[in-house]
Image (cartoon, rainbow over the protein chains, first blue to last red):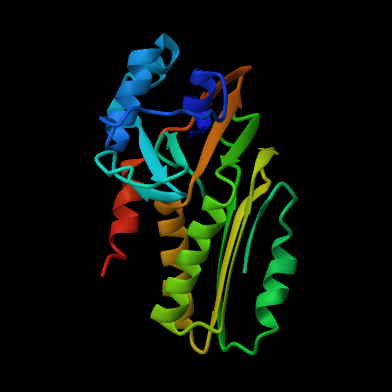
Length: 81
Length: 144
């Protein structure tokens, strides 16, 4: 897992390794599983409409299937330029 | 060419590199840290690897769509002050229309497609910048 911007700040770290159970199929499932396991994650992920994700460094919707992805990033909408 | 890093951006050097390719027209966009709303410092965070890849995809698309001779995006990250250059986008083409259109495409789509996050400090308080709906609209006009 990689976290950026205020998601990273609220979780208190920029990365962690997780091993979700088989019923975690999509990015949204993974977010829900992490939130269920920790108050810190639950608070950081409280408003799902403000979360975006990438699988192996490519932007995907939260409904995307994790498949064989090795790197999942969760972050707020981007604000560059 | 894509560069993402903490070094100060020298727009004159960027322009000189674009001029060397024999283009008939060059368009540039230079984004600066705004000083007019009390911002003391701006901090830019990015997603190393993914950010560069996203910018490269945009440059590749622009080159193909407008037949560019050259295209450059240089984006600064880390802490910066009002007046500093945040981003330089430059396109070189045979004529003005493709250069101007491709330059607008690159900065519009950079705003929505590349993972960067801005944090402002003003009056001792920091806050993450919220995205603007107008940025989504500007990016959407380039959809084919």
